[in-house]
Length: 194
Image (cartoon, rainbow, N blue to C red; front, side, top):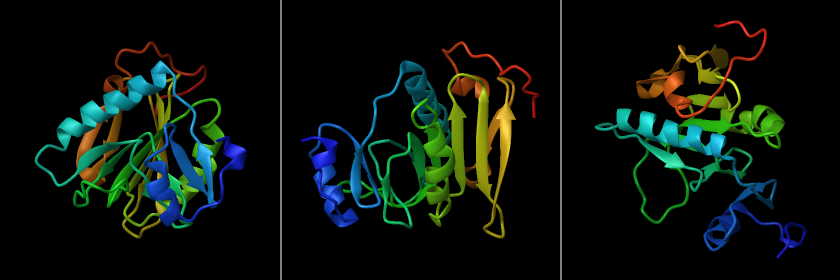
């Protein structure tokens, strides 16, 4: 079935439907949208995040989740971040993150503007999310959006392999060198360390 032929769906229709699809989809404004595959550099960063952050969550109620889990946004879209941290109870039969605290998107040429604008705005509207991490796979540069005590958002850009990604809402810090381990990356020309 081609993407153009897919019917519009509610979130309640989409969630059981996606369970039986060979390809991963997101639900965007009622329309299932196929997700593209990822290059190895993208996957290396996601797996490094899962390993490095996941081990630091041992003994806490939080756990890492993959792009197979759905984050429901306030617009009733079903998004699949590349990586996330869920601190809610485990429901073995659910495909939805119950209490997502961190979501991570690794840029690709086709998703960079979507991740930085539309998805970012949607993730900011999820009350439980405390950190939104946007990762450049070609350069050691991460934009971290964090919720402030007054529930507003602020962001910082973390650059360089010696820098540290801090996620205080879940009590985790990870060096960028660990997230980019196995990859050859260089700072962007003219990028100053923050």
